Length: 502
Ligand code: AHR
Image 1 (cartoon, protein in one colour):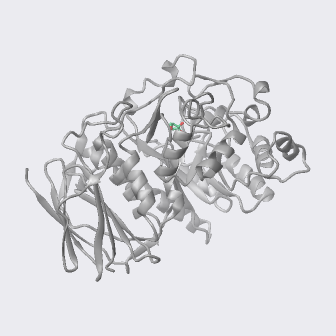
Image 2 (image 1 turned 135 degrees about the horizontal axis):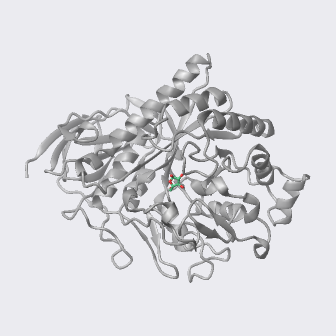
Image 3 (image 1 turned 60 degrees about the horizontal axis):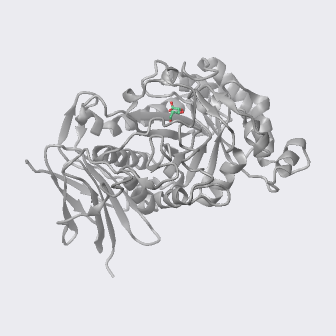
């Protein structure tokens, strides 16, 4: 195996932006088994009094999730929030047209808020701007956030929730540029509706933070143009524009798949530039942030499509098994989000449980960590303080989809409070290991070195072998004065933590 070499410098003087805790968000959609038999399963041996699976709650906390988007996704565009509140026995069964599923509504807004409090995460609520509009959005926000004395706030109190939920973050719909979306709209139609809704919500509470829908993915024919038109209509009233991207390993072009972060990086730069262009045209001083509120690896070509699904209650939908390569790609996507911390204010890995998820469960059975759980958990735990600008010098890998991609992709954070620096780095090269030289500030020594790599790149975790793929201590890290050297295995994700010498 040929060994390549690479170099990078860690310098706390070169800062991009503070690490935004909201970058470690996740997503709970009423889809497949994310809610039912995922986070919520009354009757499970480990369910608490509210029916929440405590094993999943513990894994959610271990994952380090800070924020969770709810209740969809495509689901929200045909959802009536009123169906999910009040006495459970009175809640109607409905057809969820997004996933051709039967929705029993045993889990709704108040259950989600109780779950979020136990998980210690900030809620991010999505509004239905597909089949519904301004009035229903306002009613939901009044029900959720107004203290009392009005019909809807008193209804919430009658439902046993005395204090307002105080939800600050609201998504103005979901993927409304997509023809598959219930209530799909043109940019002009959506921009107008989003502006009217935002105006009303900000009148209710100017401190609400609003996310306008951007494109459903970077391949949409209106990518860029959609964001420009929507932001022209909403610029002074919204705080974020959303981005969504899923990376599909199925076509067998492994080098391109390993370079997926190049696409995410390009999307972020393109939409930041689009937002700034609109701001300049409008002579505005505001700076719109990006909400990358759906991202992940998804074996999308294995999914037969919504129309092919038979009506069923919480069916097994897109429960992808993630392997070592997928975990390395997820690690590289997290690196990309951190590298863009000056523009990306929110990010949500989609989804949390079972549906393209880091956490898997069996009904009545165990919960376990998928391979992709690990880079997320370690990044969320150790990325603290300021993101540093890190530019590796390394060989390039030719890819069919993205041209030349750097073999080594990295970021680092520096914590002023502790003096610790954490380096997050992937080697995308399948052909061999990479000898990485790290130039360090004076007085730092390595305190931890973990890597996720495996001779079998297709290895996965399962209920029977839940720890088959996990980070292991890295070997061969050497320190010579202010220079650390380590070997990055082929197709690997690594973290090295450095701390001031005692
Ligand atoms: O996360 C799965 C689906 O992907 C979401 O419902 C939708 O918003 C996106 O297309």
